[in-house]
Length: 321
Image 1: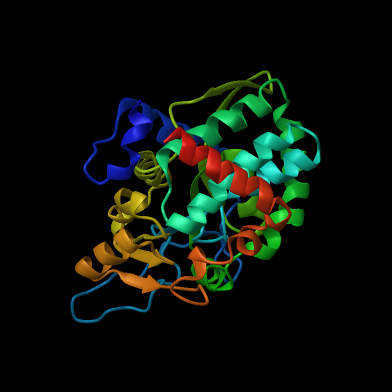
Image 2: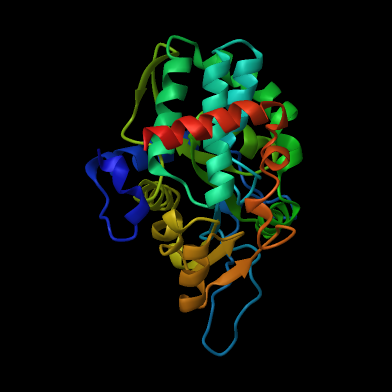
């Protein structure tokens, strides 16, 4: 499958499915976005006096009142510690949507993510397939309602304050701020709304008459698909990508980061850190130490109660190899 090429996303051109996924995400995001206002209460659309960068003087960033600028934030390990799909899975398990063995699998995938510092495409595809099978036949409105509760239970305390402050700086400047994530768009929209952001670009699961079919529109919003989503949203919203900013922890998001004039590496993995330094991108690391994401896995991932199950999953994974 095309998804197995995610680890080399920089070299891989966008496929028709990633374009479809990006366009679907942009359309969904525009339907659920919040109206943006300038600090004095005026709408962005009503304010046309935007700041322009000149070679003689570098303006403060973000530029106040620039209605053609926006910020795009990856979610997992950039805005929030850990993976949103895992936290969502924990909440669904608590509500008896699936069995313990599937929660153990979610825990193993989260532990791998924290240990390796990279998103394994095999694990991501497995998580995607598991999530689709779990929600198939359920109403979108039901999952949205449950998602609100899960945010309070498992996600609210895992937001990185430093990244949250960066997003707020863009909002205070009157710019729109979007999450861009492989997580389901419904989950991403809840998180964006709770943080006071404009909206979210996420993976779009197909629904008919408000009921999930168990299929995706295109492919997961990952790698090149994220770049396609940002490009599509920018075109629809009249944004100038050279004046926009993007933030991520993963080298898989280099296609998205490369689209904008202001790329930031946040809590970067080794490959992104190297790439960012080579191109003189700005870096921010809000972890307590360079190895923070690679130690204390049960506590950091919130799976202390499942330590035994995770160990069993690790052993099973090794036997499969």
